[in-house]
Length: 120
Image (cartoon, rainbow, N blue to C red; front, side, top):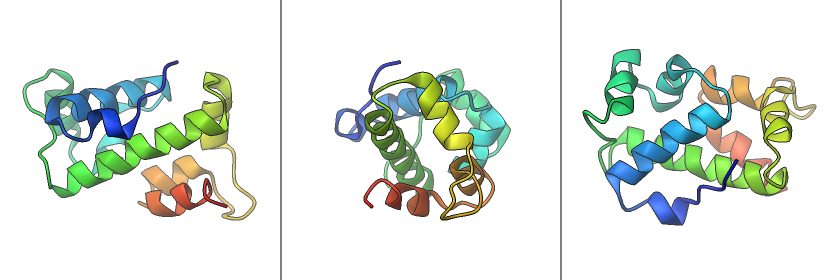
């Protein structure tokens, strides 16, 4: 697993889109789950995956994608790049929240709260 940094992708629609798709794969998420994170439809994710379009700058999806990359960057640092640790951390319930970060991000749209765990 390799580190994808927000500063390297935040100025390019193509780079951000490709990075979000790579992160999705590295963390074992389905395209349908990414669609929920970015508030898109599954068909939209298919178009992104086939490079038929990219996330548009300054859109809500752009902002959500940047938070997703930032989450990956923080998680990568927290787990020292260990893939198993990263996947486990996402899926293990956090005592402070009572649910897993995965559930908070995908089902409850609480990405900002998950990011706050890395600043404590």
